[in-house]
Structures are given as structure tokens and as C-alpha cells.
Image (cartoon, rainbow, N blue to C red; front, side, top):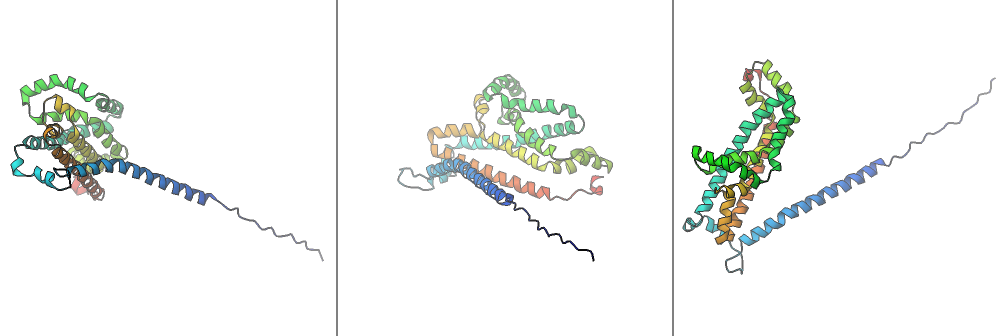
Length: 295
């Protein structure tokens, strides 16, 4: 009989990995850092707003708090005092709408055309759109003053003419908002598919391009409205009345009214941001247009 040799069995031990606790601890530290940064940034915004609210609620004799300054804004007896303020708010809202439409109607088709048909012009277009951010507002006014002298003779000196200057001012911000959404969308494939199905270019823009760039368009519109509502230099130097110039005039006689209107404009911008986010979320769930709709 042949002797059988028995080899000793070797037990392999799996090494213990300690990467999971480290990643967990690293993720926990990152979460704490993000929350701390969020708290600091929130405090930087909340403290001045809370001080403005406390100031607007201060009573006339300084001994307590009431809503008299808020109610005085809508009091018919103070209509003559706040007439300039009402004109400034109306002009600013009109300028916000006209400037947003001007930027979106002129900028977006140009960007889509360059992106689809002339890719070599992307860099020159970006340079032209970003130039206004490097020019101070007072220098821009010096260059626009001769232009507005001609505009005043041709189209009048209404406040809506400031939309031309505001369109140039918000051009860098609107371009970046639309370009970020444009770079993340395969717009060439979508437009070629729509054209293959027999869609015309206007229908393709309305049913394919605009829904695909909805978030970027809404962001550009919101930035335009925010910039227009907070602009002071151009309107002041061109002798136009808007919200900020009216607030400066009112603050000389009634500082409480200026603070109340500033808080209302901040609340309006915040509500507008929520509405834009909601509309963007609804637009993301929009169904894809069918062949019958495109043809």
C-alpha cells in the first residue's frame, strides 16, 4: 500500500479593510463643514435682514414696535409723498420685463445658431458677451450718453429706454446661465431629430430648444430681474427714475419707507426665485413632443 501523505490545510484569512470607517468619517466631516459654511452664509444674510425688519417696526417715539411704517406705505393720505416711489417701482417692473425679453429674444437665438451652425464663433461670442462685466457702470454711462441723446430725440426719454443699457449690463450673467444649460444638452441631436420628423425651425425652437433650455432661460430671466431692480448708477447718471433712485430720494425724508420698500423687493426676489424653481421642475417633467406635434 502506498503511503498517503496528508498536506496540512491552510486557512486563508481575509484582511480587514478599514476604508469604510475612514470614508464614513471623511463624509461626516464634509457634511459638518458644509453645514457650518451654510450657517455662516445664512447668518451673513439673516443678520442684516433682521436688523432691517427691527428698524422698520420701530415706533416713531422709539419706545416700542408697531406696523405704522408699513401701513403708511399704502395710506392714501401719503400718496403725494410717495408718488415718486410709486413711479420708481412701476418703471423698475417695466424695465425688468422689457430687459428680460430683450436679452432672451436676442441672445438665445444667437447662441443656439452659433452652437449648431457656427461652432468656431463660440469663443468670439463669449468674449463679446463677457466684455460688459469688465467695464465699470460709470464708464459705461459715459459711452452711452451720446447714444441716449440720439435715442431721446428718436424714441423719447421714457424710463423704458434704460432697457437697452440694462440689456448690455446683464449680458454676461445671462450668457453664463444659458451657456451652462446649453453645454449640458445634446441640442444638435435633438434639433436634427426634430428636423428629420419634418419640423420647421420656428416649431423646433418652440417645442424642442426652449423646453430643453428651460432652466437656463429661467435663470437668465431671474438674474436680469434681480440686476434691474438693484441698479442705481446708470439710472442716476442718465437722470431716469427707477426703484433705487426713488428709494434714495424717499430716504432723505422718510428712512423707514426706504427700508420697508427694500424688504418688499427682497421678498419679491425670493418669491420669484421659488416660482422659477417650481416652473423649472415642472418643465423637466414635460412629455416629449410627438411626431404629430412636430410636423
